[in-house]
Image (tube, rainbow over the protein chains, first blue to last red):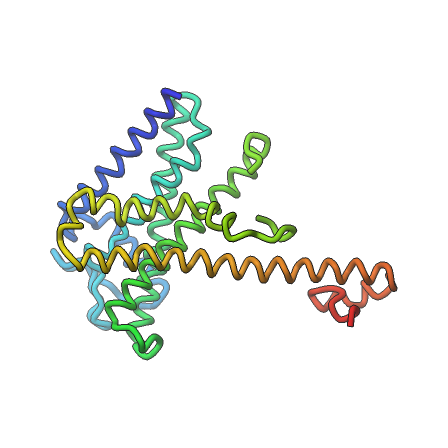
Length: 175
Length: 105
């Protein structure tokens, strides 16, 4: 129980640190997530992004910027917290706690790249097809699209984690 | 929530509770704790959209799951009735994907 509380406390500090880093950071400081996201979007759409200091990743061809607010740090933090809670029952020692924290961090980073690249690819498509949702302004479309993709990404990640849980320790968890 | 049982709306919401809680915590609770709510109606409008859209998505997922499980149950019921009426027909309808549906008609 004590170890689990420690893991939860460390997770809370990591999430606070992510949010803190995000609020203080410039686009250049977020290269560790913006650059791979831009590469993934480039692979999906054929768009070339270049790093522009203090702007982010820019596609001059499509007039599209992957800026700080597109970094997906909120998704990363939400996914990390969710995975730690999903895997918390596995924590029995300091070592297993470290594995849960490290595994959750890596998995949430990978998921953030995939989900964020999907969201930006969809945003590029919607920007090219403004008549797809004529009832909404482009800002509203962008907002709703972000919520739908991020929340669906969290649900899918949670289901994937539960599936892995059932496959790896089917006896411990029956639900 | 498998194909064998029909999911209830409450069960679907319960299953989505962890992602929903995580999402609301990061997008609403933490900004509110940092004083975002004092920024006025802009945040309130944003918060309403952030709250409503995931709930609509869960309701949509529930409807999709319900239709899917109803289809599966209809398939199974159809398959059972074929076995009783004419077991030989099950093999020749396997290419239809949903075995037995046409044989019931």
